[in-house]
Image (cartoon, rainbow, N blue to C red; front, side):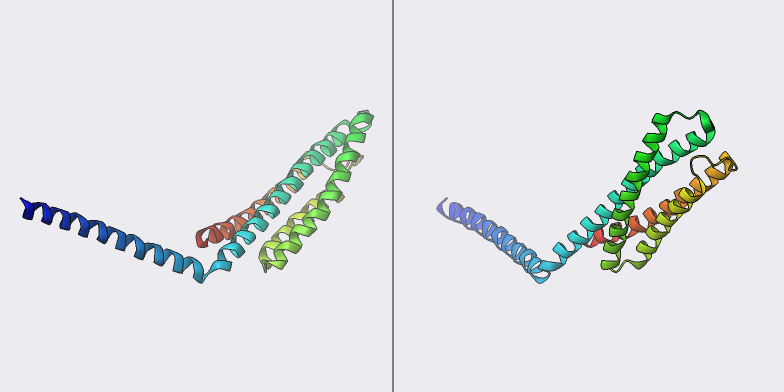
Length: 178
């Protein structure tokens, strides 16, 4: 029995030792891998954060533009009967949209800083389409139809979707590498 107990203790000790050795080797490999590229992960995370900020900014511009668009279309439909309070609201939204365009330009600069020229061009095109809309659809204009307005809005939506498609692909690639 003493021999049998000794073999069991030896067997258990070897198993524990082997488990500890495997754990130590695994820990060493993980630590070595993390120490090889300490800045890469932080850099990738910063790029992800910047792309998220750009996406948020585009979302804000989209929201304000939607308010602007609905108010200006309403003004065209009602013509002279459009209430003064709604006109004041449109002026406020218009001022807000112009302020957001400054932030949109900052988002474009961030994309250029990251070397994302295609994303920046796409975002600039989105802003340009909104500017064209504002030049063609305005309070008091009587010679534009709802179909023309809808067509202009559809081009803006398409350009925005193209931008988000490109941004999403870039974001997914960065997420995969982190």
